[in-house]
Image 1 (cartoon, one colour):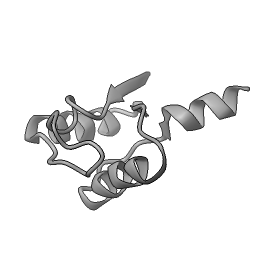
Image 2 (cartoon, helix red, strand yellow):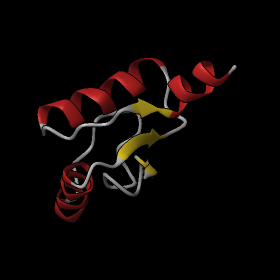
Image 3 (cartoon, helix red, strand yellow):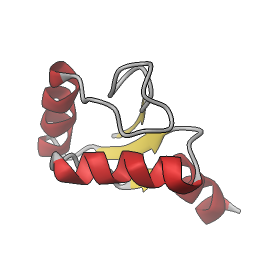
Image 4 (cartoon, helix red, strand yellow):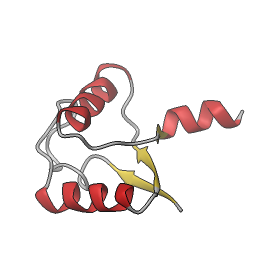
Length: 78
């Protein structure tokens, strides 16, 4: 199972860009549950550069594991 999850407005609050933001508690629970079930998770975001780094750092700090981000998927495919 492959699932893409949006960052701004889904994992975190809407008003954080380009900062890290605050992870919504229910989002963290669902992401961890999906990973425990073996899902491949893609971070779906238009963030790039430092804004993308901020997002990745927040996810890592909260032990939320993603397999790819959408930019990595795009470059992997072509």
